[in-house]
Length: 166
Image 1 (cartoon, rainbow, N blue to C red):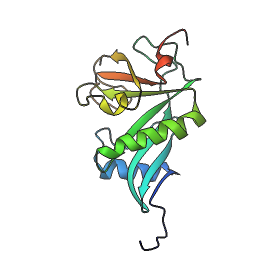
Image 2 (cartoon, rainbow, N blue to C red; image 1 turned 120 degrees about the vertical axis):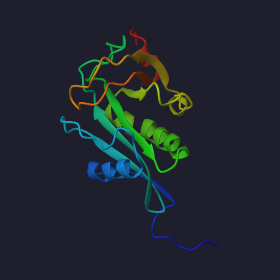
Image 3 (tube, one colour; image 1 turned 60 degrees about the vertical axis):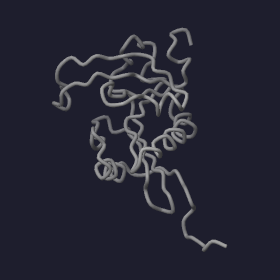
Image 4 (spheres, rainbow, N blue to C red; image 1 turned 30 degrees about the vertical axis):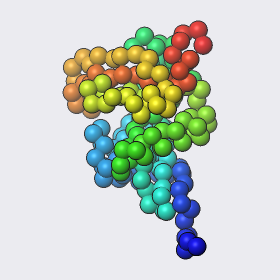
């Protein structure tokens, strides 16, 4: 018999953005904490026995429309999975699936994620059923952050949302 615990084995809970940002820093997310000026971000944390192990954040789209030829996807029908990070890589896949199944449907019809094309293979999204729908080439420095721009793959869920007629 196992010993009783005060925490469930695993839970996925809404948390304050400050807590999510602490974990993004602690786990070394390359974009760092989420600090967008719109103020409508939220965060969900995956816990194991009460200890945070992964985080997923949701934000409104920065621009009115998604780029890369996906202009039919707009801020009114989509949200961005703006950060996905975990203390170990396998847990990103778990947090992504929980976000897609339980958070996305409460926020929007379409989920979008921008992934650095030079750093990631895309397997986390691909294996979760997302569609790599577009490529966005960097054009210099990001005027908001001052950081060098990044070449990005744009991932969309559900996959059919990438088609203009849906």
